[in-house]
Image (tube, rainbow, N blue to C red):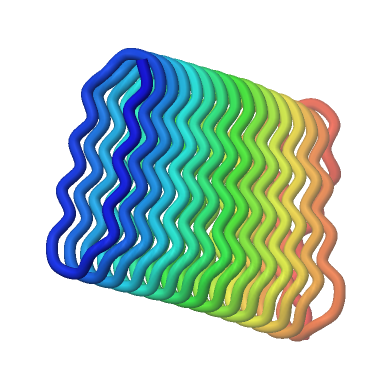
Length: 311
């Protein structure tokens, strides 16, 4: 029926609970905590200590793993309905959830965070820290990856319906979305942003930063690439119906659209702008302000050809 393990000490704590209904493991100590659950209904793992925490929950209905400490936290949940992994610490956090319905991984720390969710319906990965964040979501319906940090952010979403990747940081952001219906990649930072969307219906890539922005969209219906920054912008859209590339910056802008029906290119910046439109019905290239602008339009039925180079 009910299992409850409570240990308060100094050296080593080892908790193992095997039952059917309710498991509650609570560890308060200083050196090593190991909480292991094997059951069916409700699992609650709570570890508060200083050195090493390992929480492992394997069950069917509800898993809650909570680790609060300083050095190493490992939360692993394998089940079917609801998984909640929460790690608050300082050095290394590893949250792994494998199930079917709802996964929530939350990591708050300073050095290295790794959140991995593999399931079918809803995945929510939230990492708040300083050095390295890795969020990986593989499922079918809804993926939400949110990063707030300083050095390296990697957001990878592979699914079918809706992908939302949001990265806010300072050095390197990589947002990759591969799916079928709606993709939204948003990167806000300072050094290097790379947004890559591959799908079928709607792609939205938005990069706001300072040094290098790369937006790449490959799909079929609607592509929107928007880059706002200072040094180098590269917007590439390859699709079939509607392409819109917008670059606003200062040094080098490169907009390339290859499709069939409507292309719209807008470049506003300072030094060098390159707009290239190839193949289709209607092409519109607009370059405003700066030193050298190059607009090239090659189309089939009704197109507006603007080929000029001025200083």
